[in-house]
Length: 629
Ligand code: DMJ
Image (cartoon, rainbow, N blue to C red; front, side, top):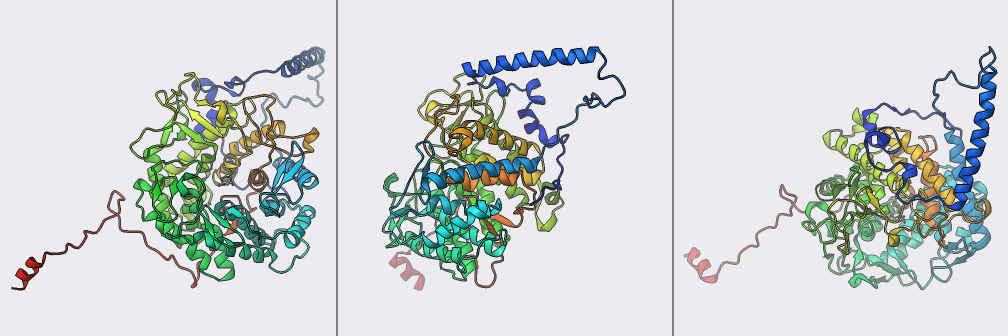
């Protein structure tokens, strides 16, 4: 694929850019008080760094002396060509094609290491150079999750080997419990998008596998997963046995399923239904949303646990991080997947996003970073100023919800039937603010990589354990040692990719590149990353202690989104595809005659509360008698 200049050239003077300019210099140093990159709160120079710095200084002084001599003797003043470009600062032209190739190299280093040390295993431990299975014969966790990334990167050789393994070695016929959600988003999602990209889009010429191989595997897996939905309410159990297809309640959390997990299966099941013309997967998955919605959660914000037997929520803890996150993601994505033919999901999404703005948005001190806080005791309770890295899918989601995947220019002209108004402008602004915050979660640490959880300085905020967050009043972001690990998560680069595609603002590509460089510097294992990339113990430790695990979403999501961020915009356009929560792209499609939204929302009042019909009062017998007479 050759590099072409993106259609939407960024405007560096746009007033929309306040947040972004603020974050990387510009306004930032002048009138904002968040530390600059080098003044990271935890930035410590190691002895090695100091020696490096000293060598650099010596080199710089030498260079200045030689340059001064040449200048003194008029070397640069003649008619010859000057090495100084007219004293005007010329903006560096970045070779995005080259950067994209660097991401591909990182993918290949990870893949080669996996192939050498752990081929066919579900887990890869790059430090000890070994692999592990999650169920006895393995279930293709890493290979299946990475198939479509290889297709997108046009890596035909490794893809052929992976395809051969899926066709000949992968079996789901195993008497083992697996997590319903993870297996759906990674395995079912991975197989379906491999089918879409190879059979439908024909993105990459690969040696022909047996016809519909990926689709047949996907159908076999989905049939086994169906048993998870056989609860009294229709809300799936947390786990399912692949052989017996029996649902298994969660072993923790009082047997409740996580709300995000129950409500993040719909894109996969509906796409499969569409592909094979069977409504069963569609119906099972959409029923879940009906049951959840009938709980009438206030302002669209759902508690993070739900009982599969009753369909009722457990507790009232609300957050957009773990266990809550992708419930919100799949509302708008279901609406987009079926080409806006199911407005019920847009209604739910809009209600929920209004709820997020009303109850969860907060600003940090002193730099007013916008973040999404948590409500451990539900609406009305105290706000906890904590944001998981997982929440960083939200900037992209707000932007996607506003423009429906079009560029801002297109959406503002209300092209392709997109509705544009105050709400959409507001969501886009919020997306930009949150994007900057997520970037700062990387920018403030010693490694330049984000922690798993960030705490924000609310001035008067308290953490879960009641301790005051305001450790140091000059810091907006606090990283507690127990939250300081980095698992190679994708959410920030996912949002950067979406923000770049939608706004055309090159700053998002630049931020993505800085994050990628930090991964190269700190997560690489072995000389030249020959053993791949891994998770870290503490993002404020340099060099960081490495954890021995490469997450499959490093290949499926993080590197894929970085690659797409640096690729031309016509590769998987956002108005034509929807990415599932594991970054597996599916096409948008028409529902056709076979499919319909099989439920309606219960009537609600102006406040969004479900209108409870008055129970028909049973009149006392004597009253009935009297009326007759
Ligand atoms: C992935 O499996 C998915 O993105 C999921 O929605 C959240 N957790 C991981 C990545 O962080």
